[in-house]
Amino acid sequence: MVDPDLVATKLSELSERVERVRSHRAPDAAALAADRDALDIVSFNLMLAVQTCADVASHVASDEGWPVARTLAEGFARLEEHGVLAAPTAAALKRAVGLRNVVAHGYARVDPELVHRASHEGLEDLSSFAREVSAWVRRRGDAEEE
Image: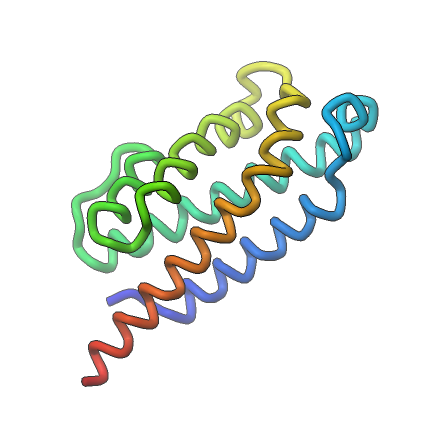
């Protein structure tokens, strides 16, 4: 059974990461590229936000006894398969894994354009993830109380 307190703690962490991104994002990619500290803060917090979502996905799947995901993206697919996430949210988070991997593993220099786009367009996807997981956890709790 999913631990609602653990999920709530992780979603609170996600909210904090999203706010850090909001407070340091730049109006355009050039401004973000010019401010290396802001680029680092935004990139790092986006990476941690996606990782937090992946941690939640892993926790939910494990506690529900669903097949183990072999990749982070597969973890989001698993949540979609079981009705935790809507298809658009799962797809967005699967794409976000790419940015997370670039930042986490230093595959290449972080692209300010990609980070800027994620900091403006991707935050709603992270918020959707939090809303959908929260709603699913509430529904599970309500069903178990009946």
